[in-house]
Length: 98
Image (cartoon, rainbow, N blue to C red; front, side, top):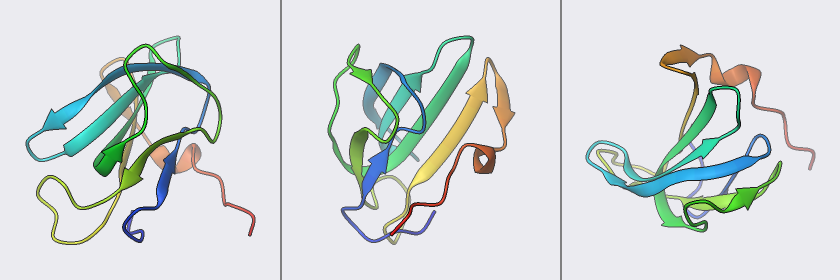
């Protein structure tokens, strides 16, 4: 997702932070466990705002967007998994009212 640098990446559902860190290709990332095998991944963050085992709720800021990893411009990688299966993340994204 192309977004301006420093945009807040918000959790799409209630959960617990399973992991944070840096991984080549993803840059700084956050993984949230939403139970029942569902996980969301937020990557290419310029700053991580949560800690492992922290509880988050819907629209909770987990990080700020950036261009860490292998990107040349600010973007947010948003992924959704159930177990090892990749899900369509668009089903979890809701338009933000302005």
